Amino acid sequence: MNRRSMIATGAALVLLLGGACGAYYYVDHKKASEEAAEKAEADSLKLMTFDPNNVNAIDITTADGYFKLNHDEDGEWTIEDTDYPYKFTPYSYQMNVIASSMSKLTADHKADAKKEDLGKYGLDSPVTVVCHTAEKDYTAYIGSSSVTNEFCYVMLPDDDTVYCIDYNTGLELRGDIAKICDPYIIECTDNEIMHFALVHNGEVAYDLSRNEENTAVWAFNGPVTDVVIDSITVNTILTNMVRIESNFVCFTKDEAELAKYGLDKPAYTFTLETADKTFNLVFPEISEDDEQVWCYDTDTYEVCSISSSNAAFLSGKWQDLTTKQAMSVSFYNAETLEINVDGETHKLAIDHENSGYTFDDIDVTSKESEDATKDFEYLYASVSEIKHGDFRDDIPEKMGEPTCTFTYTLTDGTKRKLELVPIDDSNYWAYTDGRCIGMTVERSAIDGTNGCLSFIEKLNADLGI
Image (cartoon, rainbow, N blue to C red; front, side, top):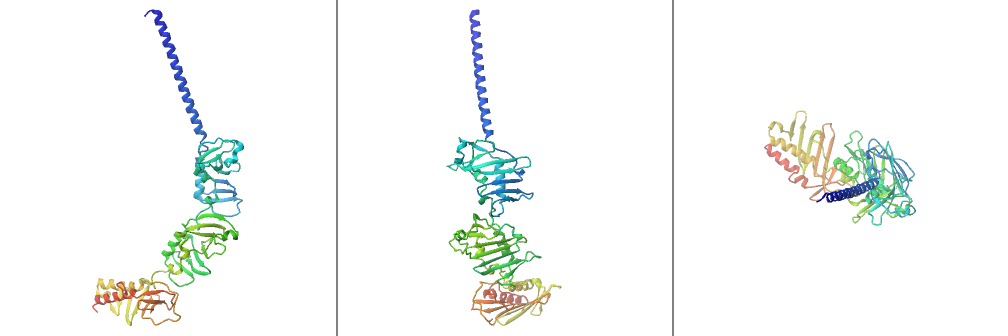
């Protein structure tokens, strides 16, 4: 190759290399520009970002009204200002959801919308949500949802763009009363409850008050008194009750509206009191086929519904809240127990100071028999733990002749007596301290395997009688 050819070839190579570099630069620059544009578009869809824990208040303006809610140091939300005609307790959980949803509000894409078409997107009169922090306020205008319920339309202040956000996020931000209203029918803890009562068609089903000094103790105010209450049962009922969630329907004072739910002439009135608040709830008559039960708060005027499975307290009676024992006297409170069954009499004496037991004038302790000591205690328990059966309404006007009598003398000198009057061969009326409230006792509680007659026989054998 001559010199001229070499120069020509070199020049051609230079031109080719330059073209390749130019093409590479063009492609690389175009890619970088596209990536920058994509990043800018993605960033433009991040509508706002902040720490939801810094939100100290939220303003919500809807078709229902204006609500200004404050977030206190205890994490609870309260309504500071509103033009809504009804009072309600805000649902703190839902308010936190709103704060969290706003704090990371991101759009999926932008809608191809014109300013004059905002009405099509529900943005001509949107819901306005404002989250207040110490540094800045964050505002969003929430419109309607797309036809497919896939997106919800949103706008921001000083921005004509219509953004499409996740449908469920939009639902949370709309601030519907049904969502921001506390769903629990009783807005307190079970430990705060001091009194509760149920009246059915004018008759008291149960009425109880907690002892203010000993809060573990409950007493009946009606329809009976001086009946021992099963505190565990009561506390279980109250624990379940404060967890009952309702489905919001509306607020109303209109009798015609209440009549739609049978609440204009309710059958049940349930009252519950704490130290500083009273709840008054009414319910219509219910049937076994009802899947839900309507409820009306006469103080807040809220109509709601609860699952029928949560309405068991409406069918309760005072008898359901009593102890299962016909007469329970603690072993440590008793000095003597006299047993008379079908004419056979026995006496148990307890010397608490010297840990001594006596049965029918026989010193059980001196026998140094573990079986005798054990059966003495079992005999006492077989009487003090006699379980009652059903309650009946056909109580006789005059007490019959008892065939079983159990008489306690307490350490303070008080006497208590359980008397069993035969109804038939298998059942007794139970009279506690001379009074019958319809309680019955089965014969098997006396002569069954765990009945007192069985342990009298065992104790006699232990003592060689």
